[in-house]
Length: 151
Length: 198
Image (cartoon, rainbow over all chains, first blue to last red; front, side, top):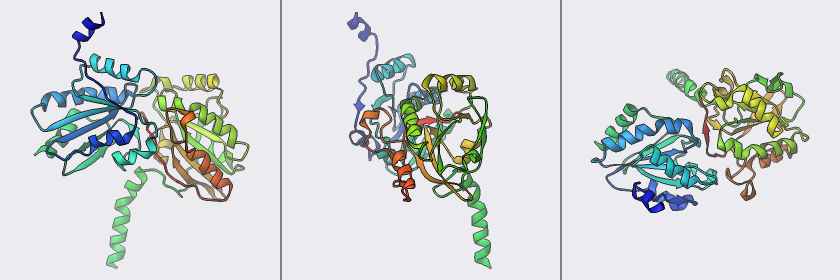
């Protein structure tokens, strides 16, 4: 039963980082790719509403040097399972990781001093620039930023 | 002369930005008068005889607010007798987040045994003036002879998930500092929270 089930799903292994320091390398890549790091949670309504925007970006830019990393802040019992079933239900193909380090005062400024800690938020960076957006995007807003970064 | 003009222009230019960001440490907090879950109205000016007020923007639906809820009740029980009562303000638009409707606020305050007012920021003007961005978001105010002044902004403590793992009780330390005639340290902290629904 379990085998049948897993065979039908594109199972993505979801890394869970319980210590921000082990997660931080994702924010420090120094190459030709532009990284879009979205901070979200399955229980965050505006985050869920914004998810199709990232799905569309993933689809439209999969041959471009753009990498989306959806960083879930889900916590509590069954957080991994909650995130996994959300991804399946919403057909999300982007990389997903869980950041489960509740000492958030120690790391929010390391993501960006401009972030108050409110969800959702998105960090967009490459080797030349870095900006934190404490907002939700429409697709055209996000695409405009991505276009300016990958030129 | 030139310098004066430039200073003036600069002032005009940064003023709207500064206002949009809400209060910083040392700012005087505006008065408010909001509907409480018990049917009365509660104003900041009602607390003129207290040493200060712990204003916490919080709500029903947010898992971070829920995780900190019991600790908020404890803080009120600890500091209300010492002159620093909690006043909770719910800033979300219930049309966008029905769990945060006034009726649901009444229910939650009753079920959880809130010992403090739980106010509805109906026009959402109060949270905007303060510059709160999420729930929970704390503003610790000290009562001076001519109004309430912001002394600490941020988180309740350093662990949203597990009260038993808390190492630094930022808010309690800040209130204790004020009670002892000292400045809070740190004056600002951050925590993950749910964006305010507007």
